[in-house]
Image 1 (cartoon, one colour):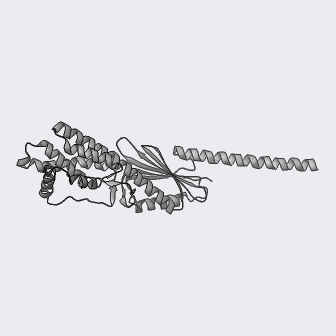
Image 2 (image 1 turned 180 degrees about the vertical axis):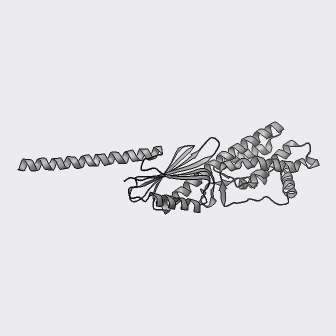
Image 3 (image 1 turned 180 degrees about the horizontal axis):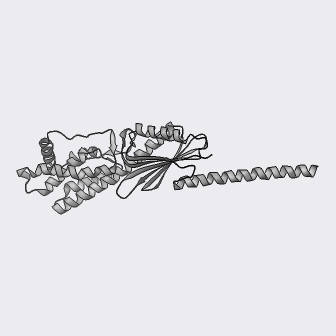
Length: 291
């Protein structure tokens, strides 16, 4: 009897950074490099915020990579930082300087990861050199958007690495990863028995990320134990979701790619059976002729 089980992680919240791809850069490091040549007014205003808040820039939970949806705190932290400068009489009529300083320290305070360092560096540099409120506000918005897109790529790739590691640890060592589209990454892992563990990372237009997994081809009733072990490995790698769901499928594939693999498996089985019947018929014919 063919068994199967489906596993869903809805709205993934975080994953450990220890498996973040080596190419990923910290936005804080990019800003640190740029601040070496930044106008003294910007560095002075950043220092004012740090002093007023009673601490230097901190990077909480640096070993945890937060999901793109959690980046909505950027706006909240930005508003909190600019409020500090609003209370400074020397900054009263300098909105451009306040926006720049609040933006810089906000980006430094978050554990943000990016792929394209050159793109982000240029965007931050343009923010620093903007001269009007309109220009500064527009560059602030585009910079935040670019960083969020970059962070989403790194977060998705980190999840992909975690899934590959978890799959290998439970015996599904033959792993193939495919970026089907910007919103879909598929990881197909196969064990020595030919069973498949399919995992897909889905990202919607609001940057909400779900992981859908399904076992395909299992005939020995081990699907429940395999999925339990897989979930334990994912949890050990720091994958946290807002909601989890697991359910048996009774051998009926649910995910489109699982259906495709199941169809291929069934077609192969039918072909093999046809060959066997053909050979048996041929043997009987030969025996009848000899008699």
